[in-house]
Amino acid sequence: MKFSTRAIHVGQEADPTTGATIVPIYQTSTYTQERVGEHKGFDYSRTVNPTRLALERQLAALEDGRYANAFASGMAATSAVVGLLSSGDHVVAGDDLYGGTYRVFTHVFRRYGIEFSYADTSDLEAVRAAIRPTTKLFWLETPTNPLLKIADIAAIAALRTGEQIVVVDNTFATPYFQRPLALGADVVVHSTTKYIGGHSDVIGGVTVTNDAALYDRIRFMQNSVGAVPGAQDAWLTMRGAKTLAVRMREHARNAQVVAEFLQGRPDVSRVYYPGLASHAQHEVARRQMSGFGGMVSFVLDDTARAMELAHSLKYFSLAESLGGVESLICHPARMTHGSIPTEQRERRGISDGLLRLSVGIEDAADLLEDLRTALDRTAAPATVGLR
Ligand SMILES: *Cc1c(COP(=O)(O)O)cnc(C)c1O
Image (cartoon, rainbow, N blue to C red; front, side):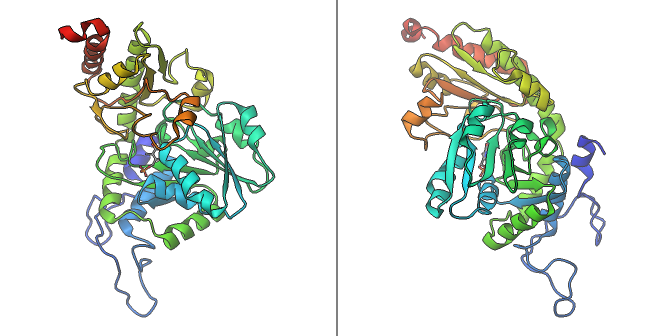
């Protein structure tokens, strides 16, 4: 079965009791048993719920994985995976992570004695150098957020020895464009809040793996810690995921056009998009991705102008998050990455002039017109008074 077909059919069989074509929202916490301990496979909804199960089967299929666990948020999925570790264990993580991931590593898991090293995962030697005898896990994002750097998943997975777990946060690429498990990763994590849900109306997360033992351990965390999505949220995510393929094609097409437009502007000093030949890891991206996604970042030298541009667009809402059908713009230094200390942030290239776009699936001509108008309006300081 091909990708689009899996998205629409796996886990989506007609309801056995009523024939409902669409998986119902099983809004129930518990299930009536026929005799003590005798039930239809469902006993309590933290442990298992039919709507959530349908979502898990659908999302596992999209990653070409055998097992998935759905969570109440991407951070809950992340925490369940890192929660497999014990005090004294070490993690090699990317140095350009989602801000919330960095925050939970630094301010929660470090208190439990788990140690983290941050390396530029687009540099294999930097990753190798960060490995310690106690390294138990590699945490990769690719493309990274917000600089859209690319990590070579297969090359990093090949560094793994023994029981080490390679985790890829595949939120930005989505399984439509990148399948980390096939490249050697052990676990894929998503914030389904973003492209998988796709409509900016529900928070969620998922883990996917082919390893039965890892699945059992993650499932144990899911049930023990209990950060599970409710049936309504699972259903919304499932509905969104059915159209992932068509949406991603449009996101990537629009993003390429936007990136090329920005690159052609002399008043934009840098553009980051893996689909540009000028991108530092364009070749790796071409090798491991089948498309380059919908995220584009760019730099304006003048910080004040960047701040003004952020709220001057008609179709790009100034908002955190990404991956919905509507276009968004954000100022990472003050918004998504505000929890990273300034000095560290700037060292990583997240300057005050950096802007990040989540390019939506509106008509590309409208998006370009919007960007052109706002860039022209904010261009020369001398014209500010004349507007
Ligand atoms: C949003 C995001 C997360 C966190 O997911 P939530 O659903 O907001 O908890 C993790 N990783 C990446 C790359 C994200 O964009």
